Length: 95
Image (cartoon, rainbow, N blue to C red; front, side, top):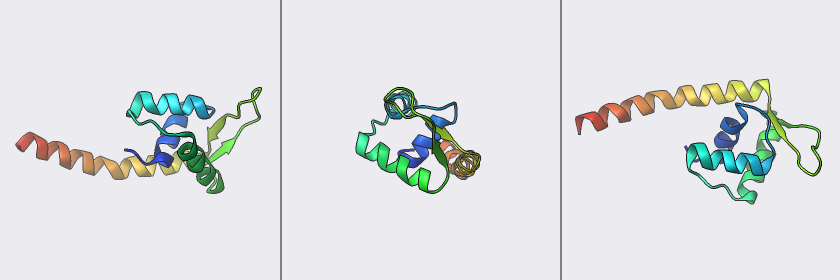
């Protein structure tokens, strides 16, 4: 899973985070390093779609939060990935 938007949604699934915290979280759970341009491009697109929202600034940092629509979208995307993961797992066991 390397789609930046999906990674941002997954990062926000366990709580609000600002950009640098998302970069560190995504690196930790997915092993993917998103550059600031990629991250903030994904954040902009997700905000425009109503899947995340900016929270009030915390000093100089602006945290983001997953919206109800964002949580639903993430659940749909993860459900779509499940059959692919199961099929690949079966194929690897046979190989």
